[in-house]
Amino acid sequence: MAFVSDKEANEENELILSLPKEMGLFAAPYLNLFQDFWCPSLYVQGVINFQKHFDAKDNDVFVASFPKSGTTWLKALAFVIVNHHRFSSFDHHPLLSSNPHQLVSGLEFFLSHDLPDQILSLSNMSEPRVLATHVPLPSLPESITKSNCKIIYICRNPFDTFVSTWEFFTKVSSRALTFEEAFEKYCNGITVFGPWWSHMLGYWKESIDRPNKVLFLKYEDLKEDTVFHVKRIAEFLDSPITREGVSNTVIENIIKLCRFETMKDLEVNKSGYINNIIEKKHFFRKGEIGDWINYFSPSMIEKLSKIIEEKLGDSGLSFKVHSEIPLQHATS
Ligand code: PPS
Image (tube, rainbow, N blue to C red):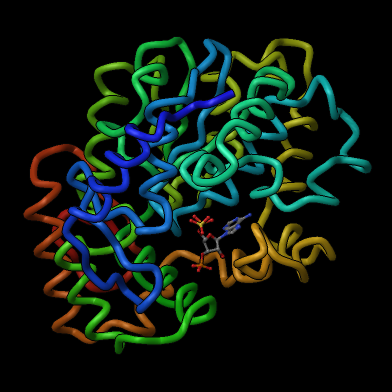
């Protein structure tokens, strides 16, 4: 089946070549400014394919996130909750033998190659499907925004997000910029799927306007009261595990299976690669709130605090950063 005519493919190529290009935090991948966000060059075609060829189903569940904000954790939780009727044994659960990124695909990557086969495999997936994306809300395919599918979004305080991003990319690619240079880029919004502020605000506003469509989570909240927020996720998804008669043990078992220490220690997450590119172990570093304090100079703290204040303004979105230093627009 021909998904894309030669003419359409040429037009897409020309469009991609014409996009503004910047070196991201690291030499690879480069970033292209596409539809007002900084898209890794390798994924621009995937985003276009996602927008043009993906058909959301009403019972789909999307994990949406800003990178390095808790995607891996939320993928695991969403997969376990949604599939509880299929995999109710926690001793033989697929998460014990597969990394969350193998169970829940990020569509901008998944659809960046072998399009007809990938579309077919998506349509053959058992339902409800749990899928993922880092694409900002305004650039999601229309079928996601228009259908009844649900989106669970996670983000994290911008301090820890930057440190996590820095540590990740220094492990998976060559270190092209210094910490300070990378920080400047981050402050200017030039980071994978950035700017981070518009990414967060897009989903934040949608979660207020359409609370049945988008559930907005923060890494810090999920970490501090996991039971409460996992129940929120299950209720949002209308999962039977929240109904009367189902014991709290199920929720506790889900949390235990998905917690950082469990996942990091699993053999399946200690070796091997995701998509033949990224070593699985790099998705699990410290899993803490407040590690940024070990990296930031006072002037960096001041600069990022001001940007948070300026960009998030009176949106109502604020973050806990677990620091003794009083930060504008952040609660410690
Ligand atoms: S990615 O590449 O965008 O999918 O990365 P992402 O998963 O969003 O973010 C990676 C950070 O999340 C931590 N992590 C977890 N925290 C709590 N619980 C679980 N299960 C978990 N799994 C991964 C991971 O360690 C990264 O944070 P840092 O601060 O770098 O440790």
